[in-house]
Length: 426
Length: 193
Image (cartoon, rainbow over all chains, first blue to last red; front, side, top):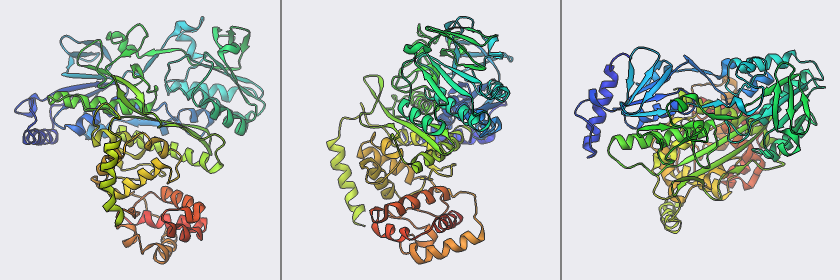
């Protein structure tokens, strides 16, 4: 929280001059009183909002508040379970954003005062803002399955936030006997990363195929259908034979209760016992969204889908998994695209202009095996205030594609990761 | 050069015909920033198999994206994505990336690969891809400093298409290349910064 650097100041003065030349209203005469934007959460959404606000208008002072010193990506963390990569390869720091003139502060936000427009952290003092962006991610609904609790994740990992939970699940798989059963409990909609549980099944099967080939992966699902379903079923079969079994809710896959000590799950029809149980709980917006009064009865955050400004609090914007964003899924790419739309809307508002017409894209790759990838893509537009698919665009990888297509999609998945993380952190 | 004359006309006609798409006009940065998740900030790619598109020729980018949309150019994912844009929007996206500075990768290949690749380039490619692939126009993309993984992939697809590769004269030449020659050629171009 040092004051304005010389470099930032020079950029700021330049932008004010440029804005005047274009006939745009400037907010003030000098950089000192230019607009302040605070961004909370340094993940797929928050980093991009901070960076793209600075790119569009370098005179805006941007502070990014994040409670960790580094970030571990959830996308690609299923590959840690197969042993294809380690967590270090998914870990990033915030130095690149600092170089862009963004003030990055390590602090834990404890409250937001929307009247006074101040964010309160655990550290001394507050963070005043003209506009606030929050990208709080998800939190879990522990009450959805009887017997489940946050404490129980020490033996029943969710591994749905990459880090120690991922390592715990990996350790349990390593300790499992050959011939054991790994149960994945897949959550009800809506949840973070719709293809994630099914890619995870494949990555666990990849590990088991090489190290414990008599073992099984059993997916107990709260749903009767899932993302890229036909492609996953085809890919599982081709790469892992009958190793992966999926039980739909209708077939008894909906889990009602768990005994975490015995690793016994109660379904609507029968009981299941796993050697390893990965229970991915039902979800809602990140805790901060709830504390700040930004959630509705659904547990998620209603926003203006053109700007991502909260419908509940003026000048506060919610992006990423926590936001209710029409046809966009809760994915890393969606958080990225939302952050850019939100950044453009905030810069327009700060310069006295109307919100621009938005454009949104989503792309999700899933790696089923090291040479077998699939994808889903979507292009979206705003129609009558709602984010909808552009008709005729987007869709899935083709069914029964040749080996070269499946192999190159893995390379594209890895390239996607390099680029989206570079977009976030450099 | 005929293509560059027909572009603005085609764009004008199509823009009129396809008027109502989104509720309003979407600006070039608004459209183009959505590409960064796979092609890097402002189109400078950090990933081996995604091409850098920043600083590419506008006419070239326009025709490639249009060909993805129509299915003329084969793709795994770009066809699905480009179907979401009008011709006017594709023209705007092309203009945005063409206006960005080109960024070469910071990788260099082994001397052996570079020599072998240079010999193939001189023999088969130099007539359209001048100056080691640095020169570009609306039919020939910049190759110098491009990711070798991407160039290799494109050459591989072109080889499997043979005469159906566009332009056909490229298909005829690439058809005869071995895997090792394609790799050498791709490495040579990446080393030309």
